[in-house]
Length: 512
Ligand code: SF4
Image (tube, rainbow, N blue to C red):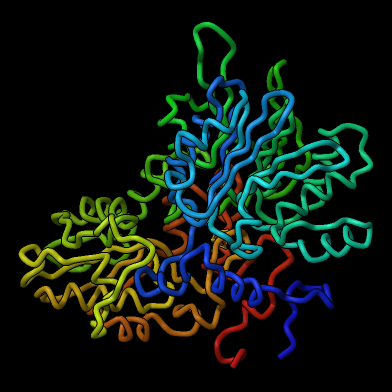
């Protein structure tokens, strides 16, 4: 089958498999396939941070990235500026592995931007780790980006025709090249002009030698918040972060979210803002509330904890079942399970214990043990499960293989019945906005009925939260009127933008 990467654009080769092959061969990173048996979850996107006006900007960025580590564990980087120079250090691995005291000492200046990454576009090599620093016609620019551009192919082709030379395969560099090629007279006009041309999901922080910029795409797919650190003897430091949990660690106070389509600039003279785009319906990623964001963060104007609690309560109202105990699949199912248990009047118990120290690689026993990966990560508490009718709460079923292993584990520990409840609707379509999802043919709910999935995972019953229930729990509506407007494309197949990968959304039967 000839593959069309972008709707309406012919002749743009799909390099996804090439990138994946390169990633698998890279000695710098673990084999991503080795992780699949451990956790069949959608992979996090990225986390970004920016600090302006702090004497230890690099160290503050490091702490903020530490708090955002759940958004990407593949690579991390920090760039700093001292008014003259722009330093940039990035590496493969966790934030704490890359940034020792010695490394942070090499990042001087009162401004910093940082990034923690799980690759969604471009290969996984260090070259594509962020921040990316580019010496453009508009001067040195460092950029860090969370999200995924969907009109990347035609923009890149146009820029190359105009003489652009790309150093990376990352879509973040597209934005820098657009800035460099913009005819606008000032840097801030060039940035606004460039951001208006890209389509898709982006929450971006940028830095020049003396300024910080932060922007969100016009539909507001990914979160980005602004905060302040007060200093008794001088001006406040301004901070931007993907999630507000980063502010807590820095003792920063939340000011507000960066608005969809807004470009904020911070200089020594203060904060200024402009809209580079307006009039687009909000389509913030509802899966941030379901799974990605930390429950102690406030995103899209509401606490993630509150949304998850309400998802659990609504799930109990929609699909309650006679049972003895409610057990979460840790960690992301915990808050929804608490809500479910309270609403259903059932005891909540940690019947599965997660080993938090499982690394990215491990030595398997010589004789392959059934379901080894999941058993390494989760262990049942036998005395809580024996003879009980268990309601198991999880946040998603992707391929179904991990869910089946967990159901087997709970039953193997003596549970009399296992009823699986999922705190969002069935995942039927892949994401093109910065979340790594399998193709439609690999999503179990895209190709099977709920009863077929129940039989596959060997549960006594299976139910998902309804789409209306999910929107209600997140104080949202699909039309966005007067409430949060959310993207729900992975549950509906209705994409808020026009550019999607055609093959990725073919159901299994068609793509065979
Ligand atoms: S498709 Fe799903 S995961 Fe992707 S942005 Fe939309 S809601 Fe989020």
